[in-house]
Amino acid sequence: MAENAPQKDGLLRLLAVGPPKTFAGRREPGRLVLLPAARTVRKMALGLSAFDAAVFAIAVGVYFLPGPVGGFFSAFVALFGLVVAVITFLLWRLGSVPLVVEASGRVLHGRKEVIAPGQARELFVVRDSEGEVTSYDVCVRVEGGNRVELPKPYFSCFFTPEEAVALAREVAGALGAGVVEGIAEKAK
Image 1 (spheres, rainbow, N blue to C red):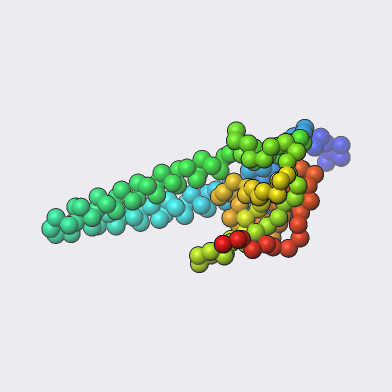
Image 2: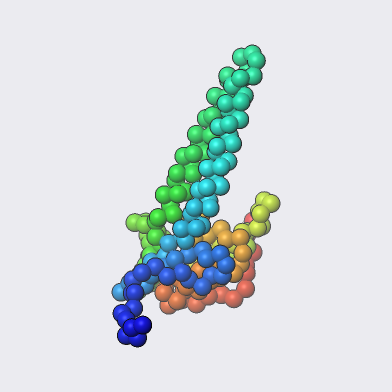
């Protein structure tokens, strides 16, 4: 084959997060652009869509119950299903919003500035054990000691610490900041 074939610069590459791949990213001149992997977005949207279909099936089944309760309860369940459908759509749309880390140290989520230029000092991972599920959030300590979480649900709320640490290292490398070793506990 061609030994000197041009590199496919600018194409999305999967980051080494471990199976399954969680993020796709590309380096552009002066910035790093991260997107959730399409598989991650599809899994979340399909899971919620399946739940939503079950809710609507229950609503239809309840509608045929005898008496006035069936129609009222069916409307309530269908309204709940509509809310889940809206949430599913919003999560699907968020899957196309990039996290952009500029060389100046500015971090953007879409058009919203998450971290001002030059404010990031270090990145760290926080274990959130509230509720039944333990998740891991990626946080940035900014000048002044305040903590800023990266935007949810795709750039925070990981189910394994390895995924969170991999994202923290990738973002820290682009920001020129350090990564605190270990996992911190979320303050209650």
